[in-house]
Length: 103
Image (tube, rainbow, N blue to C red; front, side, top):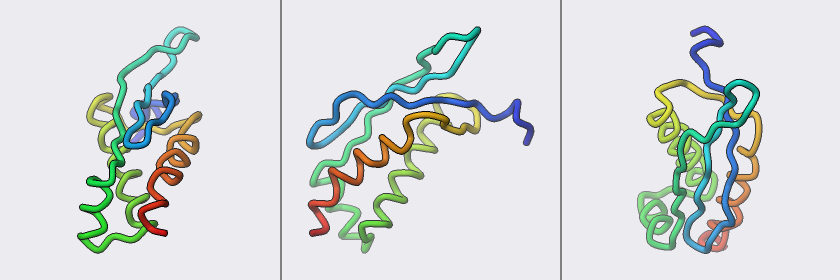
């Protein structure tokens, strides 16, 4: 796969709520950010409890969501992608909001 087949994006999360967070997905075109889509990352008690009941631990749930984020954005963009800004912030929002289910 060449670099031309990989889209470089950045993620800008909205203010997170107790059960979800909207994440804006941007790429660059002609030197300006272009919004491509928005995804909603939902991490309600119901969502997390379902994963725990399947036997997933804290790290497994984080990995599950990271995979979900990747696949969801890939589906919208129709490209493999890499994030150069905002990914860590999104994962930290997730971790902060799900840790209470594992304490």
